[in-house]
Length: 152
Image (cartoon, rainbow, N blue to C red):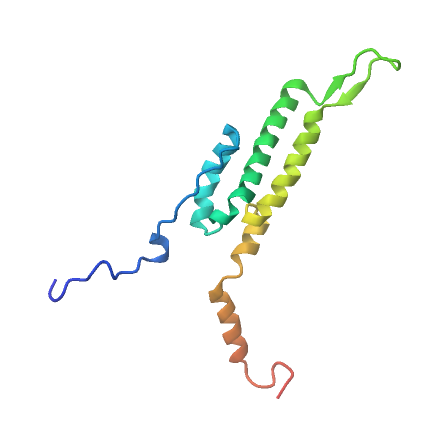
């Protein structure tokens, strides 16, 4: 190569080449929640949806997933109902408390997942508003022929 060699300190890396720090999972999470964190956080960092400020919010999602899995396993092992034992009204069946935990965890997961674009609908919502598209829309409006928007 002829001429002056490039100074690599002045080269700005492409957007995809920038290595971002992956935050460590908070200490208060159980092993299952940490597994969820380790699985999803690198992808969120890559999509620029995980910042240090969001650490505890996403930890809430991971804990909800852990609770959902644990309660689902409990229901699978112990069944949806349990006997109350002999009482004044005889033997009665009641809903297992793990079902309530499962439902609460699922609701928390849905709510928290929306913030990070973890469902197809939320992914589309978060991915739809990039600056390039915004400027394309503005330029299209500016380049409209006069009289097409109801004014002259």
